[in-house]
Length: 116
Image (tube, rainbow, N blue to C red; front, side, top):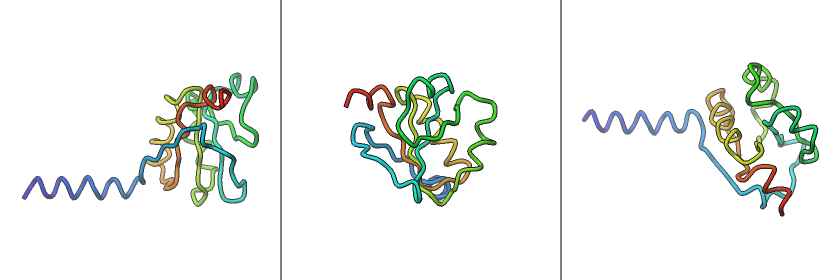
């Protein structure tokens, strides 16, 4: 009985924070700025050196990450990327914890995007 309750609790938590969805950045062909957001979580130095057109920069390593992402529209799909994928998956999980339901991690990051 306890095992069943634990399983049900885990399932409900999964639906509460949303699913973790990833897709290769090499398959990313663009976004609709009216219904979607492209979030670059690299540092401002990395962002200024080059980014995907239309991206919004909010540094995952910044102490202000949680505060700044609250200004994003939770009703829009959020595509998130970093340099290689480590920071974007962490930020994707944080966004889910903050109530964002439709967040897609772009696997491979900006480095892979440049190679396509």
